[in-house]
Image (cartoon, rainbow, N blue to C red; front, top):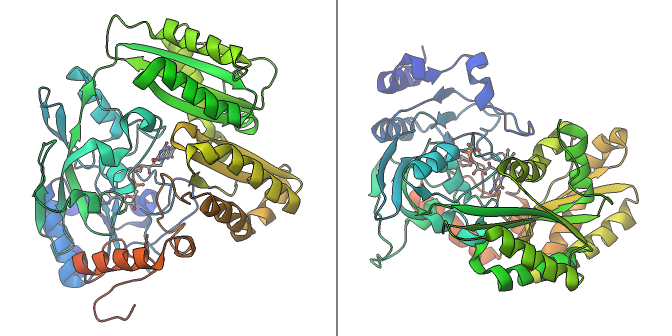
Length: 478
Ligand code: FAD
């Protein structure tokens, strides 16, 4: 047996070192099936101590490490490369809720806890952990932190970065950094946790975190609203906030073709409105006060929106089941697209005010090039974040079209950049956008990122080939 594998087994036990191809297979392909990798082994530690021992061992043998949580990432960040040198460090067994301090409004969780498990633990303590993504049953807190995940409540609570008070991480040399402080005020130097958040596993392994909790929600109201166009959607967001303040928790836009895909592929889906509107928004208000009447508030705001010509038609959910059905239409878009087949995907952000401009100009430029293009646009318009996916109307024309991804990227990403936006709003860079980002980030910013990488990971063993355009292996030139 390979002595390195034998050493891994000595640390975590034989049953938690997978080296049989069939056992490893689920860890070697990403959620979309776009990336396939090869690994020396998949290692499943159960404690921070075991993670540290495995990382130390890898440092000693110069073996690269690909951290993996729920493997729901959309940029190939958790999939190893094709050279078969790396191990996949699968963190799903590191899944204890270590502590809940209801008075401090904090929860301490290990990296492999699923997001849904953390949400449930918060509810059981009479609190809310507000991060919410369609993948929450499978994605892990470690993955959420490492990608700085966004989701549907960023508008009210911020993205993952804003929900973290403290962090524990294993550094690339195997040392453990215990930064698990549950403090809202701590001005004692650099905020190191922020380095690991959004680093996509390139600077170390996150093993635990102190997360912020919020008051539990007692009243909620949800509506599906047809809007004349995206400009009206943006103005309606302003109107909702004027009328409902911070209770506006979610504000999502769904284009007609995105909704049509869900209606076609997800059994039990129903179009909530007649008239097949080209654009709809899904709005949710929520309030911790038991006495709050969010439904009346939402209806009043919607009636103002209709009066001002910002909304054409609306349905307000009458029950939890109806609200869930409306949410399912939004949350099943990614799955419906997967079932429909390949497409060219973009996860972009621009200032909220520039969204209509982006949608107009992108459509114009893309249809000039490909008159039969199908644009599937939807997403977190309240955060200026759109998922903007392209395919051909005829399925058989699609495979060839996907071969022209870089031409489509050039149109979409150049436009985003010209509007002051970002080519990766919430999914990260991973392998997918590692090279693309070089065109858009200032050279100085890339060089700062490389310096941080070299300082923390001089051997270049942490998730090589992801995020940064260089490998920083010891003794090798960049
Ligand atoms: P993985 O996919 O396992 O890993 C993601 C990255 O993090 C990789 O680079 C990996 O190396 C690194 N990593 C994982 N764990 C650790 C760790 N403990 N320490 C260091 N590095 C680590 N994302 C959004 O932001 N918003 C959405 O609304 C959203 N919706 C989605 C809907 C669907 C249906 C799907 C499939 C995905 C969606 N995603 C969304 C993307 C994905 O769920 C998130 O990126 C999520 O945060 C990834 O978590 P994960 O545990 O699956 O991470």
